[in-house]
Length: 489
Image 1 (cartoon, rainbow, N blue to C red):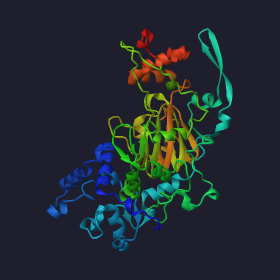
Image 2: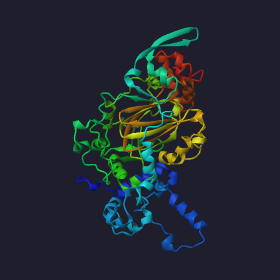
Image 3: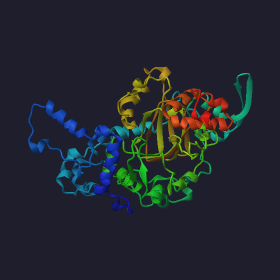
Image 4: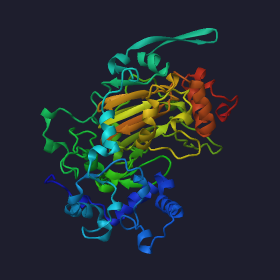
């Protein structure tokens, strides 16, 4: 174990409760998983259990949610069973229950202890997913500078034709709706860590943060500076971060760091990941917005053209914020984003600053039920989806018209996600990324307008007015209503 191991990283009772609150909000259907499982098991058994046998206490202090590791996808620590007693100090400390506690000796409570790493689903699958996808499923790879080249674009407006300059990328990938991996978009980004080992020593890389496993790079990635996880913890450890747009529960980065390096985080089937759409809105994280720029190959984000104000009867200004559009993404291995379609038929780009991701993207016409997007059911976490669906959708029997595009994304690379493509992402190691969604005139623009009017009606009014104010009446006319408040103002 590294000599700089930080023992105060152990989760105390308040921090464990903090983790539980976020978990419960993230996947509420798993809150009572153990109770339901015990009830089903007891109803199907002919043998009666004693009170001591049937009572299954929580892992610690009532904060454990065993449903999060129900699939047993990954072990936390690899040990032989004869060595279980000798690791009591390590696990007991991490869980704050004491090495001699009855709870610790209950081996069934620690599904992450295994005697054979090779038998673990995650270790077998990770090895395969770290290999680049086959050529027939791999996305094209382009250089950012080449995609920024300006080309002539001619658009017909009734009897007239308008000619202007747009980027080559806009016509080749946005208009055609094709996923692609982009190289070189992070040039001069302060957010981009330095991965040249000649420029720094390992001690400088992520000083003070080491995984409890001797053979893991969980907290000791080779990058230095920029948005490495360790550097973000150093800068913003006491700041609370969001974990979803679907709920408002938050957790500090310090507590999150403890969680992902504890047996709880390392044994969860799909650990919690930070998914914060409000980073940069307030101090001190507003500094992060100056540490990266939107790659220049993309077309203009049309949502930026919303009208500056919307006057009411009192001539005051009513603010209508645009829908969430930028996120910082942080998560350990097995975390990720479940299968989904980006909102409002927007395009997206995702740049990895640290770590490695595996992507699957399906053509828009793919039936959702075939790939596990079942209406009315909870989203399947990405690691569990890979366990249940990956072999199926990559088999030779899978319909060719629904064949997914696969991408293995490394640090410094950017993935473009076209509007309407169902996709999911799995983190293969501790990963930090930044992503933006943006509205492009290239691609299914009318479909986007329909969704904006239906799902964001107040914003649609300001957007309509803004398009007209900026001389884009051709685009404003695509919004599917004849008369708006903007027309009356």
